[in-house]
Structure formats: C-alpha cells, structure tokens
Length: 211
Image (tube, rainbow, N blue to C red; front, side, top):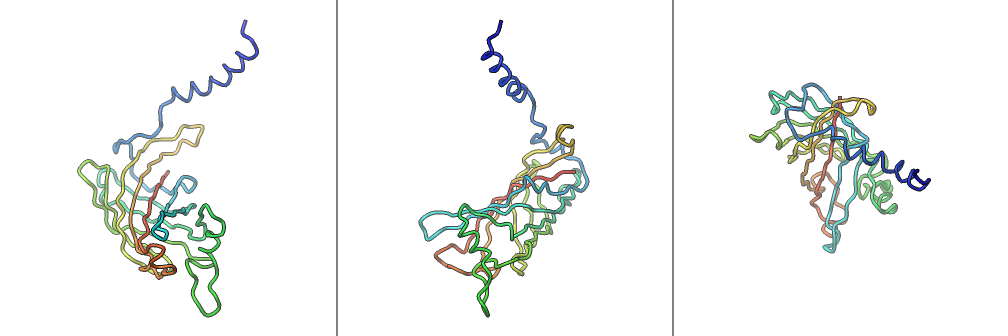
C-alpha cells in the first residue's frame, strides 16, 4: 500500500512524464509549412535591441506586441511577403527610469531624446526574399519605417520550425523564424547620447506566425 507521500510524488510526476513523452508539434522541416497568409502571434513574438553603453557593456531591451502578416507559398518561398508593425510605445527595459526616458516627451520647442511620448508604430515591409539552397535561411530585404523615417534594412533570417499546435491549444498551424539585423539609429533621426551610446543597434528578432 502506497503511503500518502508516495501518492503525492506519483501525482506530481505523472504530468512531467507525459510532457517528456510528448513530441514537439513544431519541427525544422520546410515541408511542414503550408501555403497561405499567417498572422503574427503577438504573445510569442519579440524584437530585441542591443546597444553599446559607454564602451563598458551592452544594454538591451525589447519590443513586444507586434502585429502583421506573412504570406508564403512553399513552392515559391522567394515570393514570400512580410508586413509587420512594432509598437514602439511598448518598449521595455530592465530599468523603469530608462524605459520612461525612451518615451519622455520633448521639451517645449525641441525634439525628444529618443522616441518621445505616443510614438508611432515602427513598420517593416519586405521587398525581396533570397532563400538559400536548403530552404532554411534567407535574406529578407525590406523598408523599415521608424520615427517617421523609412530606410532599407536586410534581415538575416533562419527558419526555426513549423507544425500544428495541439487541438487543446487551438490547433492552429504555426511557423517560426529567428532574424538578426544591424541598423544605425542616427539614420532614423535618433542621435541622443552619440557616441557614448552606440549608433549601431543590433536587432534580435524571434517571430511566430499562425493561421
């Protein structure tokens, strides 16, 4: 006869064993991608940014809440089109004071140090997609609009996985990517603190789409 402690241990272990036995619904298999238009999974998409701080260390933050679409044809991945909006107003860092500074209103007659109050969403719209021979990496060229300025940007994108979520979690088809890029903030009119805070901003993007 099992003791109450043994029964408790069994109850706690059962869901863990089941989770370990379950297979991941997503796989790094381009054949798992179905065609059509996907929407951004806002809850699981992050745009990270990183700058050099005074030459001592890197500082980074994130944008969340992105929205948008991916239209893709697995038979012609080079024809894929991405259109994503990133709410700059939702920028966050580990320091509340710095987060507030990024959104600090401009002084009367001046311009804000960074984004200012109620900044418009940033937007990236692809114009060209160059896919490698294996079909799991691509250079995505597009126009990034930030702070009222539009500039060309190239994303180095990696296909992470595709598949269908479990029925109990909605059953939607998902596809995910990781992408990196480097931009100069001065190109978008954000020059506060140069060169003590680097002009170059490294972007680290984790994006999930679903339909």
